[in-house]
Length: 286
Image (cartoon, rainbow, N blue to C red; front, side, top):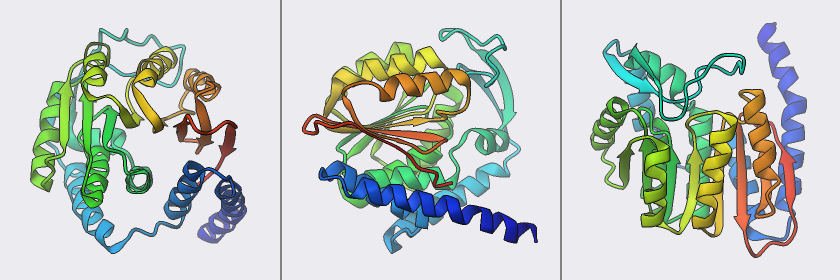
């Protein structure tokens, strides 16, 4: 009975989501149409046969990591809590944590749906240079690298503050057969500038680390001048806290952000210098 009620509850949300995706697809610019195609594909969860091959490999690794009791010591530089009354570490500080790999994977790795969204974005927009802030154990990076492999071009530079996680992720990338990912270890404030200067123009960026208002806005402002004429930006946990909600509001108000889609958990921005109008959408694909 509970399953039936939950299923019926999802029907109106799905109809609303499809209606908004249809509205997005009717926009005259190519970027909006491409984004609508990605969202529709993610909502229906219909990977191609070649995508399924990579998905099965990565999800097999995820299952292995989820059950791992191996301990890892790491320095956590991100927000400790969505409760802004909590005292959180400064960007240059951090908190030493000892957790199992299973705990890290279950709590910090992107779930399948959102990882699949990243894969579909890269498949559709075909970026050459991709940037990720927050490698963790490499699940989301693997999805993005798989998309680049399937596109037969492009590379990913992934930044990670915790060296222990970065080294583990590098081992998993090797195990999966990825040679198109570069992991850069260090605080974002120390590594991002050099990475942007060496790799510009950036076609695609996934910001998934240090989930606080000021750092998130700061990373956006730092990345913005190094983007290509049409670029895709994805921000994780945009509704996680009041601060992240304010950060998302600030980012989507920028004139250079021409298409903005709020997916509740994730926010997508399209930077398109050829587009005059700004478009804002709120679509629930969960």
